[in-house]
Image (tube, rainbow, N blue to C red):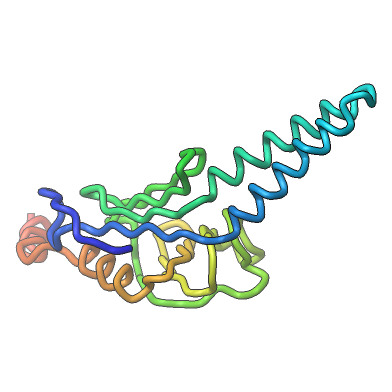
Length: 173
């Protein structure tokens, strides 16, 4: 779901998008399976605790990757998984050099990781993404709304109309 946010710092009215994916349902099922195994193996010394801890961790990870939110926060774009906010990244608009709509590869996968060429991938589901070439590195943001996000980011990274004039004046001094 994409909607404009009232944001006084935003030139284009703000951006908010929350993508949901079924992958978390598989993780919830896996976590519950480990918890059930812990219950059934409760008389096995030590092993029940392993299944209990692993099941709990899998449930926390599942809740951490339930959805991916990309949102304008004034001078930066915020990317975070939730509803448990363990993983978050902010990118200042001034650090963005180029924005383009792209696709992730099968090897890029889902989640948060860096691939072999050094590109960071933040992806919840699917292969559509927006590729941000930053001052330091490349970031692929997975989304089911790539064109809207790319348009918003291209608008935000463009300088204000007075910025060129200010830059020219600063260079003359």
